Image (cartoon, rainbow, N blue to C red):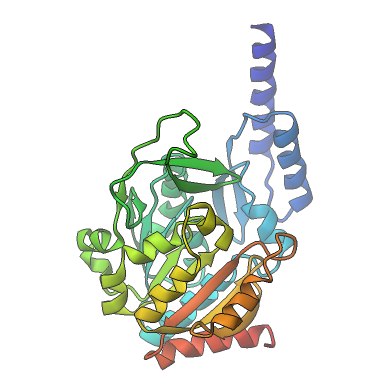
Length: 324
């Protein structure tokens, strides 16, 4: 009991210190706080706020976004640029954010462009912070939250693993349950989500960041993709697909089937590396071989329908920023 009381007392004063600190761009201070939590107070993960630009972003201390944002000058900068250009072209911005997490994508986009946003997030740990982070933006933007996970497999049971501010969906089977019962979670197809929110049926940007579940999300929204042909921005991590017994090539097959041919590859630090024809399997494999989990851990992909020259100009302009 005495040890428990001491831990609670330490946590209490540590949280007061966190609330006192205005991090801003003091990344070294944030790193120190992060190390203290990781090494000493492992189960202590308080909600804090970090000032980015003129606004505060609410996060859990374990979330590494501020570290990456200030350490890497291109991290999380692409989508705001893309969204701003997309609105200039279409005169409107309508975004479906699959895997909205704590609302950081909407936070950054609404700093540069107003629009309509549908945040799809099923993790109950993220939802309260998501609601806080969109509150300010919701005053001048149309924002809705759909509290569910998104995918094509709506019948099986899954487990959720969470680490460093992200969460993974893992399909359960006899080889990975480890004697534990699986969790039945709410999974809805993207097409069904849109049917429930018809004001987003003509969204011009689809963002997917689901830590290895992107293939299932795309499969669940083929009617929307085929009909609306949005610009698509998604995370591509082949090792996670293989862990889920999926073929990474399936993601390219889905896109090709529905008229998407060109893809701009960004590394995980936000730097555009090259524009690839996804029909060229050798070029795709060459890019995948660059993932070494030292310099490149995954790719972010920006792709547009082959009939949309106006959107293809966005891909080219992004590439030009990096002198490619």
